[in-house]
Image 1 (cartoon, rainbow, N blue to C red):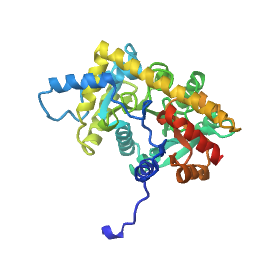
Image 2 (image 1 turned 45 degrees about the vertical axis):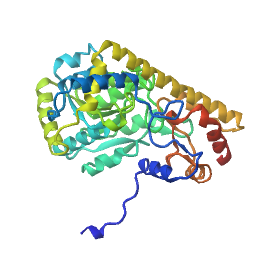
Image 3 (image 1 turned 90 degrees about the horizontal axis):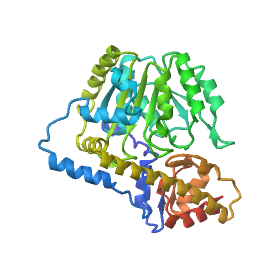
Image 4 (image 1 turned 90 degrees about the vertical axis):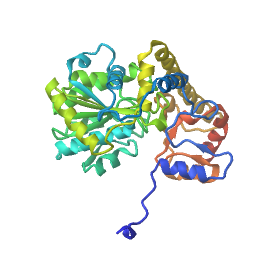
Length: 396
């Protein structure tokens, strides 16, 4: 049987990281994988995380399994961060949360749940979107369709085309939205556009699935949740796949959550029972350590304040790199207008570089960018900015 298999294509992002590791070029620059780097080019352990980790290890008395849906304290902390401390959904019983191995794990749990109970529903994803989105849902047996999102001419949101497409999506289908810091474009709806999207989805009786992986890295922890809160106010049902890889720097701990909002408490309780079945047949129960660290940080006022300051510092550094990139390209004599990069939000920019230009950057200059032209702005530093911009100027 196995000898019939041919070699599978490499992952478009993680495969690029493998190619980067094998490149002997000492001056190579990796702007592919979505990992935050500090000014020294390192992915740091946040000080708040390090302090919480010591507390967790000191208090740990067992390595017993967690429950199928994870730690209740973690679930409460997740809901408070997503919705805010006093949100009525938290007291109503309409929202339930299950712990998951990263945002990807949360998306897969959602996909399995949807396919099992709503097999005729399709999932609509933005064009473009994160490279793994389509694969997650297709391998779960769900048909995937796309809606327009990015307007090349303006390097902005193709909002009217997006709304027109969603207005024709059949009732009962699922629409995947990026809660903030859209990956790969860095382009988000403004509050008025989020309100219009919420009303449109409600009218069409569509189910939103919000991929919320970058809270705090766009405009701030609460402002980044604005679109999510507008959806929650307008719709009776909602799915949220959240991740702590980026805003806690816990990439290899794989900590995420799937939050489900139902029309009433009974429906939420029933849905939770089915989510548990999906989890049990997948990874059985989630890992404990990363979730315990996050819960410790979010429940301790001093650690919480320290963490919020660290998230703010990451957000500000990313914004500085956006501005420095635009300024340095201009200084290098690049005539193309890249000012749109300063208007985008989060870790990524949809640069507009062509496939051939991306390949030339890799082959000739050791600059690694995802094939579609997505640049990880959070991996830029003042040290690598000059050679990076010189390379971009050359391929342009």
